Length: 477
Image (cartoon, rainbow, N blue to C red; front, side, top):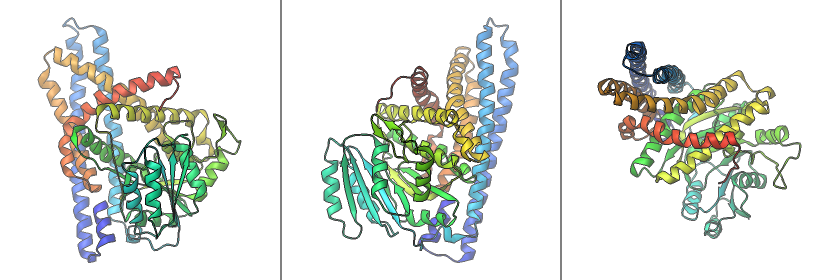
């Protein structure tokens, strides 16, 4: 999907050749999708056989509770398989539609008169802020202004930002500073100080490709599009932990956003690369922040909120709730840094998972969906808010218990066959989305570890976040 787009934008090729590239991509996607569905069907059959065999095992002095856990695990896995197949099919459909699109101008460099402001919130980013600003200044799209907001950094972020800003002669760069108040506050201040018709929010540790804005801006020729999110690609693919995250970003995030984009309701416009129509941000302020609510004695003006750890998720859902369409453009890339140690990863994922729980609760408690959001938004919030956020982690816990039990019973061969099928499903998805997102195909070799990464590491963090959320423990960054 993205490779033809990049070629069209960079080096025009004959129409016949382009058609051949598109057909090749569609054939590859179709073969991989068929393999994935075939593996899911085989795994479904194996799980049904496994469930049927439990009655026989009940005669081997196994307690009913163990059998119940195994049946629950098998049933949840079947539901997850159906969900995974559904999301993959929707994403596959969207990829085929994009590959065969008759509107290449959406992927060509923008020649529109829409002005763009870029907001960069920064906290202790002395090592990356200069490189991030340099990448923004290389943009092929004319930028109106850049606003860097230092959020009370304790390192040299402010000084380095000011030095780099002074060197910019083509684009005005404003550097603001404030007492540490959180990313949401820095973003709001930066947006208020900017002027562009469109607003690009960028994390201070991310580097934006030069053609990213030129690829994203044309989507706003559709008056219904409120925001466009780009692809977040991992820059530091060093070590197993970082490479597993790189695989997760392209497969888990890429598949979900591709599928959601077809409905115009991408649930998370990520911090590293999100482009918003200023008018929709003003509408969010009027709809959700007009009552003058305060946070720690300060009036919250929006559009970003202090109420959750996931301010990007919250804003995206608020936009969808008032009828704004949010779409995905995987050809527009931000290259970001990810945690390289287990401790950093656990800390990051705790914030993400806890924040997602908070957004899900606010969406339902405050009845955001009643403000005009589409049925598609409510469906995807159900999938994300119930399926991904709660059912998947619980399934991980049950599967770990069932796997240990199977090993104790000596059912190594059966467990291995099931694991091979799961690997084939994940590998097929990885190949399809890695190829469509223009990522490194060698990441697919890590597919056998994907289930362990999710079930052991992420499920453990989820348990901690869930307990804290239920007990109402105060959030700490």
